Image (cartoon, rainbow, N blue to C red; front, side, top):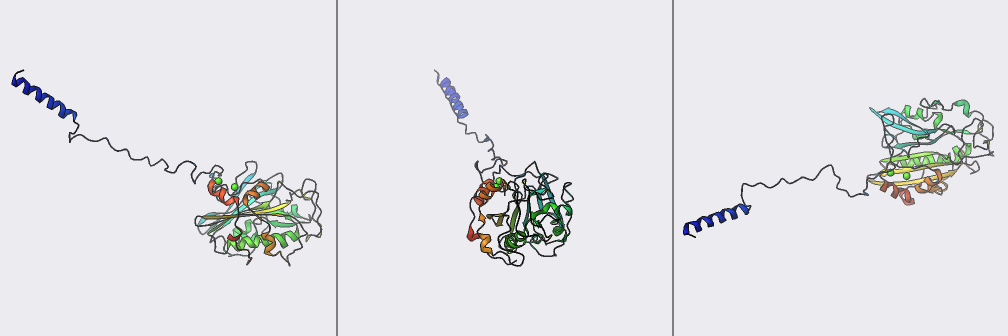
Length: 331
Ligand SMILES: [Ca+2]
Ligand SMILES: [Ca+2]
């Protein structure tokens, strides 16, 4: 090899080496792919899973409210709303069971505005304008029972229309006089005390009578205001064909910040507790009926607070903390 050929070969090798080294400063790196912002970073089984939640639609925008239990498509679901301070808000909702002529439940909530006491009881009894099979006044005549509110008149006194709607006959249950005015009333006052205490920013409630347990072949011991003894037939119906529950219940969920507490009550419908309008049950007796929501769900067949994320729902329903509630009535 001549010295010239040797030089040329060396130059060729150097050129090749330079081409392979990849350190050309003009070369650009592939762009870094940013993380996909649509993808949740939370691992599966997260805090927001909600398998049993209701779905809201245009006709039922409040179906996902925390007060509403899991809806039963067999029943008629109705939302009674009112216009309050420039907003359409849920006053209370109910599910109507046509063949029982009784609500499966009613649901509502108290916040800093809906807990207010701005109006008096209106006594505007009327058929429910949303339910064609709504009972009317004649369905409650001479049956030996009181017209017992499910959502109490005193629960809805923030606005006149709100109170008027509690007098729809779909919100009424045939209750024994001494139970309505002497015993159940203390549960209602305890709930109202909690709701108006300022201790919670929101109190959600589902109330009702057990349609899976009706009072059958019953004759009471104390006459109602109509001078008759309360009576039901073998199907658990009054003389006008309204279902008469054997128990009444309340499921209560209180929210304060991110903290939730829940408690349930289940009470047998009797007229021999020994209390009356003039002599109402003390709160200690009411406290003895407290149960957790899991147990109340087992007894009633309803799924309360389904719209809570499942993990939170399971936690608050498993136990109730007696010390988390103030056992005092000031209403
Ligand atoms: Ca539940
Ligand atoms: Ca849920």
